[in-house]
Length: 324
Image (cartoon, rainbow, N blue to C red; front, side, top):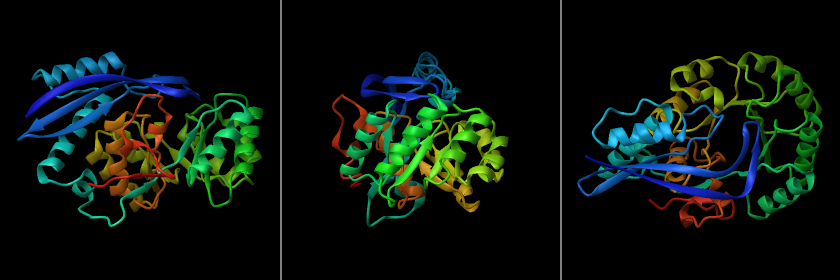
């Protein structure tokens, strides 16, 4: 097996404001494994504040592996390496990643994807919501937790008022609220038909009371950043939705296995990108097809980049298509 490592930089059309800071660009590493003239690739694009190693740590770890060193120990680099190997195995069998994982051939390979909004003002939220609706998205995810409670409530309300009932509104606080803030915001928006709220606080132990106060479905994302503790979170009974990111969970096979456990606990699984480049988006798309093909997933972020992106990772009428 031959290994290689490349890097790239992608720029966002508009910065995304999160509780961990503003995202303006993505520095991407792609590792590729080749055997018998077929290849598989994996990607890592660390984000400050989201629990992964630094870009340099990931690069050094992957470069050492490429040069016949040990398998990467850092979480993101290991996930990228595992993805490359799993993709290679699928390619050697002549099947797409979703078929390799699920042993299921889908008649419809169009995957519904959400639109991501990280705007600061009500006007921008309303404008971006209208664009998402015009583009056919069935779900919209709004970043919250980075501004004041008043701003969050106003932006959430504006987004919900602009969205038809059949379109889901999802919130992602990235652990930006403390318990009191989360309680106040969720109570204030409890009547707005929110699909679910990701990571309201840093403490998973808050979730039971937050759900009882607001009635909101709560989702784990950062709390699922390590496969070693993810099973405990899944079994805790405190979440209703699991946000699955293959890179941070050890690659697509480990992420798929975790999703099966989650579904056994009646937990919805939504696959999400790390605002990845094309390699990461394709892997996340196929993982989503393997896990929950009828769900609306968070893998449509290719449209956020100002750089030219391959057509297969750009949503069309709210869907990503995979012909493999």
